Structures are given as C-alpha cells and as structure tokens.
Amino acid sequence: MSDEFVVRNENILHSGMFHPTLRTWQGLQCNIGPENFMYPVFIVEENNAIQPIDSMPGISRFGVDSLKQHLQPLIAKGLKSILLFGVINTLTKDDNATHADSPQNPVIKALPKLLEWFPDLIIACDVCLCPYTSHGHCGMFNNDGSLDNTSSIRRISKIALNYAKAGAHIVAPSDMMDGRIGAIKTELVNNGLGNKVAVLSYTAKFASNFYGPFRDAAKSKPAYGDRKCYQLPAGGAGLALRAAERDVSEGADMLMVKPVMIYMDLVRQIKDKYPERPMFVYQVSGEYSMIYNASVKGTFDLRLGLMEIFSSLRRAGADVIISYFTPLVLHWMSQPKNKL
Ligand code: PBG
Image (tube, rainbow, N blue to C red; front, top):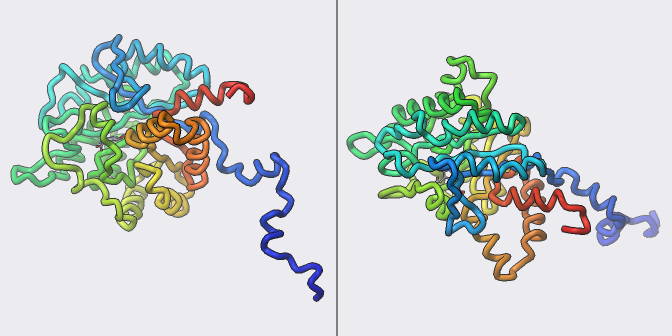
C-alpha cells in the first residue's frame, strides 16, 4: 500500500472534530443538569434559625421555617433532591442516640412539613448515630470499648425505619457498620415500606481528613479516638470494592463514594461493576471549603473550576453529585448563557 492513506496518529487527534457541536458530542455522558445534584442541608431545632457555619463559607444550618424560604427559589431553579442532616443543640446526646429519631428530632419534625410544601422534592435522610451519641461515634460500644456491631445495626435500622415512616424517600446510612444495609432493608420490608423507600449506601466512605468542616456543622466530632476502625483506609481500594459487593448483596439501591476528588478511581471501578445502580459521589465539606478558598485566592474562577470538576466526576462514572455548591450551580444553570 502506498503511504498516501496511512493514517498517522497526529492526524487522528485532529480528526475534524472542530465544530462546537461535534465537541459536545464527545462528552454527552458528562453533561450536567439539575437532576445530577443532591443538596446536603443541616437542620436544627429552632424553626426560624439561620446559623452560618464559619468553616464552610456560604453554608448555614437552618430551622425548618427558614429552610422553606431557602429552598423555595432553588426549587424554582430545578432543585430535585436534598439530603437532610439533623443537628441538635438543646436535646441531650446519650449512648443510645435517643434523639436520632425521637418525636423532637429536627429531621422527624421537618419531614411532614417539607413533603407538604414541596411535594415533588426527593428527600433523603442521612442515617447515623454520631450527631446524637454522647461520644460522637457512629456506632455503639461493648463494655470493653470494642464496637458492638449487632446493637449498632439494630439501632441504625430502627432510625432508618422511623425516617421512612416520617416520609423520607431515601434513607442513607453513613455509619459504615457491617450488615446495616441488610438490617435496614429487612426493617423496611417488614413494615410495608420495602418498595416505597430506597436505600442509598455510603458504600466507599473513607476515614478522611476532608470531613473537618462538616463535624463543626453537625456538631459530631468524636469525643475521643477516630473513625478509622469503621471507615476505610485511604489505600483501601480492595476493601471499597468488597464493601460495594456486600452492600449490593444486601440490597442497596444506590451506591456512593465519599469523599470524591481523590477517590475517583473507585467511582469508575464501582460504576463499571454495578452499572445498573445509580452512582452517587459526595463532594464533602473539606472539598467544598478547599475549592471555595482556592477561588477566593484567585487560583481559578469558581464557576469554570467547578464545571471542570463536575464534568470530570460525570466522566468518572458519577450519576448524582452531592454538593454544597448545588444552590450556586442551579443559579448558574438558570442564567441565560451569555450572562453566566
Ligand atoms: C456522619 C457523616 C459525616 C459526613 C457525612 N455523614 C462525617 C463523618 O463521618 O465524620 C461527612 C460529610 C462532609 O464532610 O461533608 N457519619
């Protein structure tokens, strides 16, 4: 064959994909719209409260009435779902996490109101003991100080059931105890809620340095020790994949990787292994503050930097991005293109 038709590599890379529309076709699966976002919200006991969180510029805890005001314009801009975190102040914390699902719990109280005000909004509830235990850990302990897995998942599944009964569409256990997905599914099925409430598992949740601002926000810093015995070690790709296998076998409807930016290899691996399950990623509090502060310092333009990050998360396999930036993103998306 003559050299005339041999395609050389540099020609392939410039293969006529010059037009903006052709370029868009290159990355359609990385598109982002309002349905790709879930907005995490901290809810407190006092109905009219708005409490700015120092370590997360632009983010506040809300009482249910001020949350209504906050969410209304976001829903008009296409907000599809929120993730609720209860934060208590006057209610007491104890070994049993009593106020995780007591009638006075801010999440339990807010759910019926939010459902009435915003009938189309999907409401997920974080399920964990740490904001409600006196020690601030995510599970319960034996007398010798070891984790009591059976009591922990028994309690966690009851809390999930009570959120489901109060109207949650999704329960999302973030504790990382073994067997909690199966325990929650069983409770839901036994109470006739098996096909009404979905389970979103914090599957690959790493013991991370990027949760600091959240622990301020949720007042859930452990009183002693750390979470390394139940959250995954940074290098633990194998454990993360085994956790995904475990959660899927126990009936998880949706999976999550958290934090995300430094764990995107696992997003791809888990998505490839379980393509039929929506893949959630949590851009956590430390990632939020880091990106925000970098933009304030002029490292990059916040909108352009975030759009690059979000496209990359989609490219890695994320279907839904849990992000504190959701209000800002919805605002940008609702602007005419030339006014961004
Ligand atoms: C509670 C929980 C945490 C986060 C979500 N659920 C903190 C932790 O495990 O210490 C972190 C979220 C964030 O940093 O934005 N178990």
